Length: 168
Length: 105
Image 1: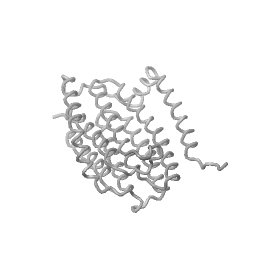
Image 2: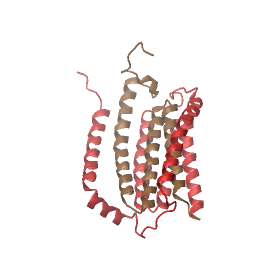
Image 3: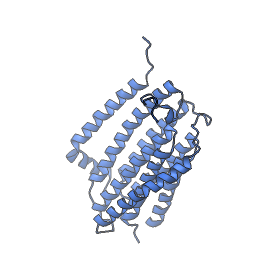
Image 4: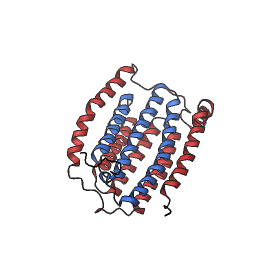
């Protein structure tokens, strides 16, 4: 059962990512990316991360992709505005060949450093709001506050960067 | 049979390299941005998998931090794209060459 769900979600994630890097229409690629995001949210649920499952759907699919689609439509990108990419498949093949040794190295490294190949048995409330919040506010308080400062800086920076320039 | 730890890691590695392929081969700035986000997401999947594998919450907390940083990055990146589009009227990354020294390459 878990096997089947994993295979379905993984193929959806790969399909969405493939659509995203291959299609030439910008909005179509954004829709492919949404498929990947939602499939990854399902994988988080399979991995007992129920809070991250919700955060992924709310923050990624709900905020980041919505903002991205809003900007694409705000700038009114037509199919004719999209840059011409006559040799994109050639570049894809070349970069895939470049990435292959790195992938092999990573896979081999993960394969050798973990001697137990199965997941450890986790408690029933692993990954839910209570456990994650307790961990966050006990051991990760300083990074949490730093993240909140970072978000404030990003908010101010986005407003400053996107506003209309005053002509002197 | 339980799906093993390595299949999740393999999926994360493949998604990461697809992100790098997108960054290298495309010229549309939005697709480059989405490929960057795809790389962040694959790292998140790896962190959550390791968190489950070792039975430790730290991986999930780090994944949440990565999501928060990705949100901040999205705001900055998209406002930069809007500013650049006002300046150049193009979404082709080859047109953003103001800092390039003229006459070389």
